[in-house]
Amino acid sequence: MSESPGSLSRFWRELKRRKVIKAAAMYAATAYIIIEPSDIILPRLGLPDWTVTFLIILLIIGFPITLILSWIFDVTPDGVQKTERVDESATQAQSSDKKRRKLKASDLLITVLFVMVCILAYPRLFQRNQLDDIRDEKGMISVAVMPFENLTGDSLFNTWQGGLQNLMISELSNSAELQVRQYMTMSTILGQKKPINQASLSPTLAREVALNLETRTFIQGKIMKAGEKIRINAQLINSETEDIYKTYQVDGSAESDFFSLADSLAGLIRNFLEIKKLAEGFNSLQVSQRAITHDAEAFRYYIRSYDTFEKQDIPGTIEWLTKAIEADPDFIDAYVFLSFTYVASFQSQQSEEWCKRAYEKRDQAPLRGQLYLDHLHAYLYETPHEEIHYCRQLLEIDEMNTTYWLLLGDAYNKLEQYKEAITAFEKVLEINEKWGTRMRIPHLFYWMGQALYELGDYKGAKKIFDLGSSTYPGDPMMWRYQLINSLLSGDMALEEESIDRYRTISASQGQDEATILGGISGGYYFAGKYDQAEYYARQALELAPEAPYRLYHLARVLVRGEIDVEKGIELVEKAIESIPDYYGFYYIRGLGLYNQRRFEEALEVLQKAWEIRGPYDPDLMRDIRAVEEALEQQASDS
Image (cartoon, rainbow, N blue to C red; front, side):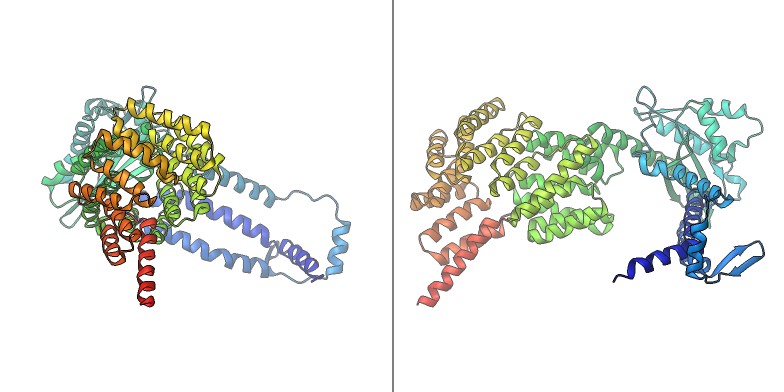
């Protein structure tokens, strides 16, 4: 072992002597410089997309070959010669006699290559959003549409070079977000540049024209033909840097399709720019990261659904998401969010119905959309283990996806792996802080606070609920969770404050007194304080004696606390008559039968609750297993 450092040192000196390190650095820098312009130039020459990939593979293969050759051979004034081994003692004697090293031409070359790599790499590393400078001072997106280039080889299509330009200008001008230079203005500017062939502008000349028109963006396209198939290609380009924002392509089968092709192409570009502006204005990573739609109107409805969900306006959220799906029937995100919204309102059948509708479109969806649907399916029908699997896959694609960090934490909560849950929730907070955004879904604070108080970190839970209350000052649920935390920690002052704030906020939102009392009862119930929970539940039931959920709230306290199991069963059976499809009612009835040692009946009712439950419920699964064990024990005793 003692010889290892010396051996490594000799090997490193030999690498430097044979100029392997220098060759590796020069090769890597040169390869990067080759790849960067090739990525831009080769597609514009009409070469297929795989050309750049093939070039990268060749350069990767060449790297180890270069290292091997640089070890074996050396370039000298007398030509390429095999590098000879040298005596170690002689080398050390020479190095001890060396004076200050002189600069060589190769050092200058390496420095120049390093600077060029830094210049090329800087925008990719530090330019977070290449569309940041697309808007003018008034916030508008200025666009110039250049004449399309005819590459069909058929002069009959020459008339469509300006025709497509005119159609695109007309269609894009319908957008209130875009400021499009008109056809006559374009013709005037282009007409003043006599040497230019208007129908085959180079990107550099098109950029010059766009800057003359004071537009930060221009569109340049080509008309191509293969057999009877017509293809129109268009690129959205930055006028100042010539960076390509996005490339679009539409296909048709005849010259008569040009009108519809122009409409389709303009629609794709318009929607892309409008969606980008809407996402930026919404200032939310959940929306801008996830939305899979090319329809600006559908995206606008989708954004509004987040606003209403944040205010806990479930009917409004459902309405906006339904409109988004009507505008774009393939909008996977809207289906997923709608299904989750029905879960939040305890409407499991509707949630499953929308999940099924969306799942029918799975095969046509992009990979990200397929994973969204796989996760939703796991959320409704499988276990948290499958949820975690799909969340992890989505986070491998995009580790900044705050929505699926949130859902990952929720899955860990269900498995009572609270430390892992908190790690996921902290990631959500970290990402939003980094990007200067905020979480549009308040459940982050509910679930993270719950994980903290389950671990006994009551101060940490209070801090999270305080943060949630400052972020969502009109959310009464933050104070109900704060109530649970205060009861578990024994903080009587916080208990009183939580009840007072919960009452005030709920009343300001128009909730009736019975609903408010039921919510307070729920806080005591989840903290295991059944006497106080019963007190508030009875008050709520007196105010609304026929309300199913008021019956249920008192029933679950009487059954779970084993205060009056028979009365609890009676109350919940009455609630089932009014709402026969809510699993929670069957759960409490089955638990009551279990407490009465009617195990077979209990198991049947609890399995019914499981079938209609919606998302995975760890408490229900635990109680089902307890009943099964009781039946096994009863059988063995007999």
